[in-house]
Amino acid sequence: MSDQPDQQTEKPFLYVVVCAAGIAADVGRLITAAQEANWDVGVVATPQGLGFIDAKAVEAQTGYPIRSAWRSPGEPRPLPPPDAIAVAPGTFNTINKWAAGSSDTLALGILCEAYGFGIPTAVLPYLNSAQAAHPAYRSSLDRLRGMGVLIGSHEPHPPGTDGGADRFRWEEALELLTPELSRPA
Image (cartoon, rainbow, N blue to C red; front, side):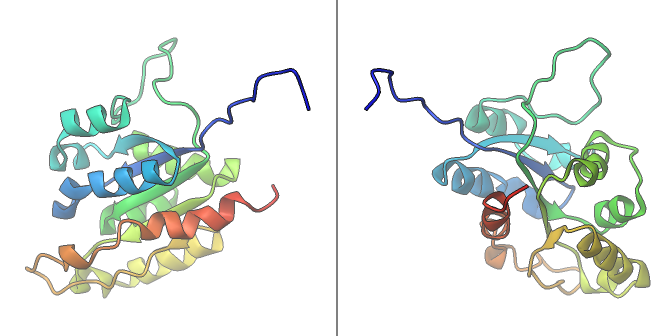
């Protein structure tokens, strides 16, 4: 037995990337689930996604500022590096741009780099069936799967409906990511 005090282990850090969908207002559910599972959480919102969440409430819940725009050179990083990333809700636009390698927003830049860094990443798609019927969407999911991205199970909803917001399983992101964190690098 050591005379040294127990070393407190650092919690893993989860980035939650929030896209522009009505359901994004409920992102606090994922944050709560992650915190209860012993994660620290920071939120990165797409520029349009920022308007779908209560920024003050999310920042109070996480203890970190929401990131949505690039920082200036020399500016400190407001979030620690992620151990994992959850994209929830993942929209048609973000999924297709991410799979194509577009990096025109901070959120997409982080997602594109995550592949190169080997950061476990999950996406919970949230889109309507008309969007999901577009050939680019299935190709994008295939490409993301090929990159090791874990894809959630929520089915596309009929256009013009609330999308089964009450059935959206925010915690599925953690269910997908947790086994990835225990794998050897």
